[in-house]
Length: 333
Picture 1: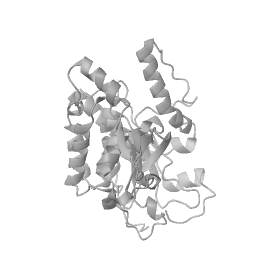
Picture 2: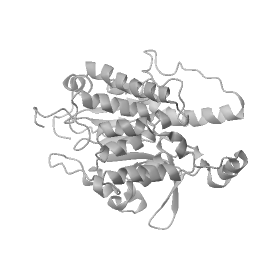
Picture 3: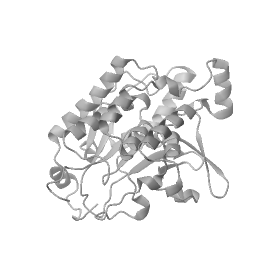
């Protein structure tokens, strides 16, 4: 890599529903610090991270992304009935309170404006890369396949379904990753043998897939930064947090939260993971707070910027490699 070129970084973006505006703040600050984001560097994300990451990978200018996400009315994505009884029936029959069609149309339209509809248009053309062809894409979307009980990385894993990765719509994968359980209907994917698979929010299995681009056989050409929508874990570890669980609704929420966070909480015990993570404080905001007011949106955006600024003030790629990956053979990608 040309030492005179702007520094690059792969990005991994955590899911968090409406809190995703903080991801945009972190991206804006990182670019303002001189980092080149997007191809040939890559981006991966879950749920809200998949939405923001897809726009970045598709080439949307960061100032345009900031304007778009700051002005977005999340309430338009609640495309279920106004009547509670009908929503309850929808949950029983379709497994979701809301259709998710409005979200799908919105992300498809924004990607099309950037000239992207299928993953084939996000192929990564980098002659200096050592990536296998099936991984040479600008974007990776994390989805939970509850038909097979596994985390799916799209477009990398379309071959599991017998489907040509380049022909699959990016918006379909992003919509599947954003299928917040109960809130949105799951997304169905038809395999080449006719069987249907049920895809839901990638956060069910890994809301923060920070290791997705890691390789053990060679030294990376540039770092992988992660953006997490929570405060930095305390030095005593991440298991000191305690929440009361009351009633069946609270019990259900606690079960879903535990499933979504279990894998990533283990990662937060790893100093090497914490050392490359930007922690954006989003206290007091839930993923499904779709009626965010302007002041809360701005607070989230600024939280992302502040997290990136604090992180980049102390970041040094060579120091990180020397401390956490001293035995890796120098090479490319």
